[in-house]
Length: 294
Length: 214
Image (cartoon, rainbow over all chains, first blue to last red):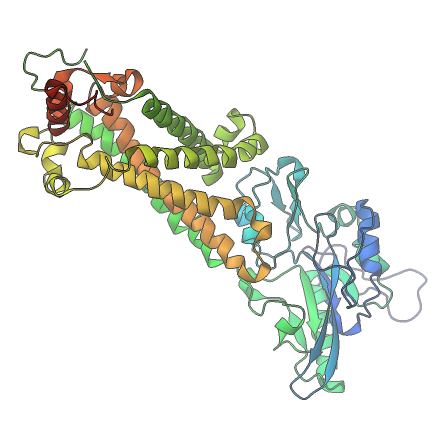
């Protein structure tokens, strides 16, 4: 479906195949993380900090190849590491670049009560606007991937922006630019899906990873950050990547039926007492010679 | 005039009430985008969010204090069960059919218990919502349950609160002066809380007991 107006048709003075031909310039965009070619170098982590202007934090060495235990409000991008022993005894070192998945159906946005604190762009990027954030952390509850992180000093929540500022200027995200192995890709969602599908197929046909597949979970409407995994049937072994992420049921009940029930009950209650007053009025005491009410 | 509410009871009531109203206003702002302007009017979203849990602590603390004061007065008795059967008569102002009541009638007791247990639920769920980052990632569902509990408990207290304010301000004249000044006319006491009235009048006339413990 690469048919945008900026699709490359021909290039002047160019011999052979036209580079970039059939490459969509359409929205929406996506980042593709090919977990199978990640070497865990953390260049993306450094690039993320540099672009976003955060200082490099002290790391918490815990005898793994992971920089620290979890993401932080000023650390949007973490290569999670897991030493996994498969059922057949095969040892795997699994590196997974963790960060916001930019869901098409973002639970954070559904849960957020503050006007304009979370914005979903037409290109699929879900961005937090800290100026409008009130610090309630409902987004933390709404996120099926446990991504948003709270800054207790400023009372604002932060997460990966997919470098919306860079993307808006026609650049790729900083992490993609820094990746030395080419395991990170950025482009239109259609192109990334096609690329991911081809890579997964290649893995299935030419390697021992017969269950290789693309992680683009439909439970959240698909994501604008996708993975190619060696084994799509065991997503949890990639440091707890949920198999079928969804906006939590509690959040859907809260923002759905419970809200309507509550609205009806409150409006009904106020209406009810008003009608009651008109129908029955106040209680008048049958006082026996006492001063009663003024 | 006879004393109905002591100074401490009135302080406790109004502390609970003011803290509740603040939490109600800001809570409704976070409940629906159509009322987010309330948070803006009260100093802005971040300010409202900052104070809401602290006022909630005051509300819960005052509710627990109130429990120390009123717990025994609020015990549901056999007479109350009879009152509930006649609640329809009470609601339609056919008070002659309603059994005489002690210091608080069964409706007031029901309101009290709804607010007391509501306050406890709001406190527990509110603490989880205040510090969600301390909920381990594996127990993330607890955060969602806390929000559901907080909202459900809030809605129950709101329903009770609507009736409470309506009864106090509109349906039973004399209630507001009672909880403000602490005193009620004898006729009012006799009409609305006959058992209580007779109990304290009896004590006063006996002369042996000190003034009724409010």
